Length: 243
Ligand code: MF3
Ligand code: CO
Ligand code: CO
Image (cartoon, rainbow, N blue to C red):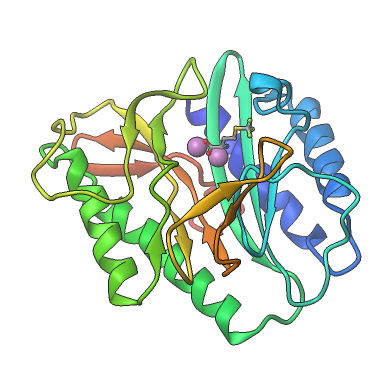
């Protein structure tokens, strides 16, 4: 799990400088696909329940599961790139929302709040905490910033399967749900909207968008409940200057 999660993190860091005005989401897909294969892994999304590409790219009001294609990213867009790798049968899952060139204040705000929601959710994770504590903390932070939490999609256990139990809701009640124990591995991946929480599915049957067309942003990490707290697995500590 450490190796696949590190590779997913490396892939996200690798693609970051390619997210520029003028690039197509297909090009981002192809670069990530090649990088993942070169590192002896397989992109988990490809053919997952019929998903046709190797990564998800979700632009502006797209919430998640955007399908890479010939759309060209433009200055001012925000785009979530979601990477999942399968290395030796183990999945690692991480995503980040990138600014394309200079972006507006609304885009800056939704990226900041979504990032903070992930960080606040992670900060709650330790043995003895309840699963509901994570969602409660995220929901409170979104509300405080007058943003909303998408309710139809959630974080998830991960390991030999891409999506395992438990469902990690990004809203909830403190003290509810199962108690976290060392060794558990799951994702936290709040989708935060600038407007209302309601979403709809596009006719491609994958792309999720906000009903009110407001901006949405998302960040995701895969986490291990460690004996004394939390271990964020989808980091590449060397590249991120930690070691
Ligand atoms: N990576 C997404 C998640 O965080 C799931 C994408 S499923 C796909 O759970 F089929 F769209 F790739
Ligand atoms: Co996930
Ligand atoms: Co993901």
